[in-house]
Length: 118
View (cartoon, rainbow, N blue to C red):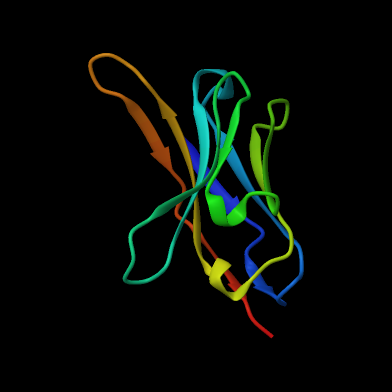
């Protein structure tokens, strides 16, 4: 299983940006899909998640600005980010998670930097 994030970079405050996570050798339909982010020195935090059933949940500070989506045909999960703020600057990670017996299955991408700055 391999997850590869793309689309990171430098974005101006107030701008929009899109991250994508391409997956290989994994079936979307069995997994919850999540974007996390982490700032150096801080804990990794959940940004947005989509369950297997398509329900979504967002961290409070990104509600109304970020949208998580999936394209099963292309095996990708995306994060559309709008009205970006400097505090959105972080390394963003995609994660696939599945409850499974006896050990839950979880996979991570390597992360990609998003910097919001003028």
